[in-house]
Image (cartoon, rainbow, N blue to C red; front, top):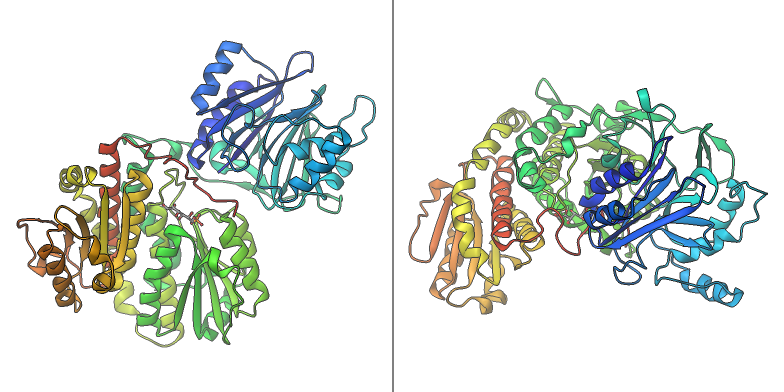
Length: 617
Ligand code: F6R
């Protein structure tokens, strides 16, 4: 969603701001803008609907220069994506700011402000913050006093991350509540520089050292340094973290898109995640703890049921995990979509472990679900997350970090399989804690990355099949058992990146409704496992075929299913291992989505209307 970038340096901020915005593009946005202080200290704004490259063109034509500066990519919520609605927003030439989040009481504030005579230039909720801050008393030539600014921000309901720039004051303010914000610290030749960013990815080319602002914090950055004040106005320090992420991990390498690169990074993401949780092939409790491994073991030994909560792709990972947890640890499992769970009044049975799963760790609904769970009497809260600096990572009691590395394609791929790897470790850990067999399954995990590679080798065959699907206008996915959530994920991926209507149903539900959609020429995609459900699935396939549906099947070769009229078959590496199967079938479906989208010419890495991390409800 929206992205913030700010630069306090002795050099021209404009190229750094534009570079930062380019690295925030992957989050999804529809307009961009920046503001700097020009040579004499006057505020200059430049905004553009459309892409960062449009803003770059404007900046070059305008020859805008200045320092310090703030910049933004906006994902429209209040008001369409226009130049006027793009951030920064300013008032009276005194103050400009960029904002991520939503101000829920903006209508009330706006009415008050209009009565006071304030003039509005945009439809955004953000503009009320500018008018509120502009009322703050300030001394001669000094900027907004931090405490006064915090008091004003205290009137806002909702969430915000803000970067603020004021006329004649070579200083930046950064503040957050409910939306992430990092302060990057310049090193080497750039020592003394500060960067504000809503996302670690945008800091990487400039620095590996950063700190995370806490909710309620306000940071004041100037040539004398960084001063941080907590919600109560006390001067505080926040720990400095050194990331080991490689700036080159933001590049696409030889691949045309981040999505394709990330699909091919899955063996490595899964290997690194498994290695983090195993020692000599034995699942360890320590990587799941937030400090005290013995406490983690004690908690895990008490678990009698699990409640898994997530959104989108992460929700599909939870659905797969429910099969594993039931089978291997013999624990009852419930899975919920976070946006539904957060408004329910759950009945929490004794010794239930709450598990939330999120790539970004900043998904608003998942965070709200976690906060609700903390009050609801669960045994403990456990998070599986790919982003160490995220709110989720800081707020759960037990944390396991997936090792997928930066994921820049909006459509999640390697983070999904890394989540599956983490959930395998959790299943084994709980099986072990409950005295159930785990050793043979754990041994098989070693081969998983190599087997994933085999699965990725199907790309050419998948590419050949993509053409017919790209011409369809509706695609039905079917699945059974362990591969049902994988088929659901396949349908989600396809619709996200190709904009084709793709729906998934349990194959057993066909006759209860979706069969009405099947007529000659309708495309149906089915992942097929060679297991006890095969005869049932074969019957469903016959039902589709009899009605002229054209099928693309991803099958274990031992099923005996082969190409025939109306049926194309892709052989997936055979497996009997229920831990391996979802990880072997998911990448081919991701590749299918990618190649169909490529043929349809969509914006694969930044599909329309979507954002990488959904930080508002
Ligand atoms: C789909 C996708 C989304 C996310 C969902 C949750 O490709 O990426 O459905 O999975 O927005 O995001 P996280 O995992 O960051 O909570």
